[in-house]
Image (cartoon, rainbow, N blue to C red; front, side, top):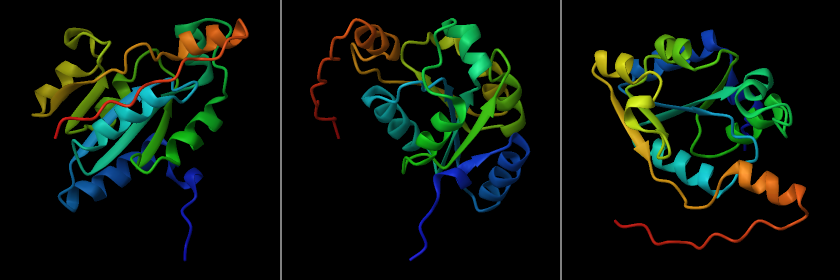
Length: 175
C-alpha cells in the first residue's frame, strides 16, 4: 500500500495552477481558503471540513512566516510555515497547500481562480479579500461557521500564562 506524504501536497503557486487545471478538466469544483493556521485547533479543522464539503478539491493558501509577523506581531508565528503547511496537508480534507508572502492572498486567488472562496465566519462578507474577483468569474463566496471561543491568539495567551485551553463541546451538526 502506498502511503501519501503530506509534503507532496505542499505546492508552489505554479504547480497548484497546473494541479487545479487538471482537476477542472475532470469536472471538479475547486474551493479555496486561506489563513495563518499557526496552532491548528478544532475551529480550523471544522472550518476546513466545511469548506471541503463545498467542492471536490480544497486548496489552502498559507501565510509565510514574514506575512504572519506583519499581521499578528513579532511573537508569531509560533510554528514555522513549512511545518504548518505539512500539518495542514496531512488533513484528509485538504488537497493542496500553497504558501503566499503577500499581505493578502489576492494574487494567489487570481492565479488559482477558485469556484468557491471560503473564509472564517469572523470575516464580514464585504471584507473578504478576493470576493469581487471570484464573483466576477461566476464563483461564490462563503462564510464558514465559527467555533465560539476557539481562537489561536486566545490559546497562545493562555499557554503563555501557564493555563490550559478549555475543552470545546461537540455540537451535533444539523443534517
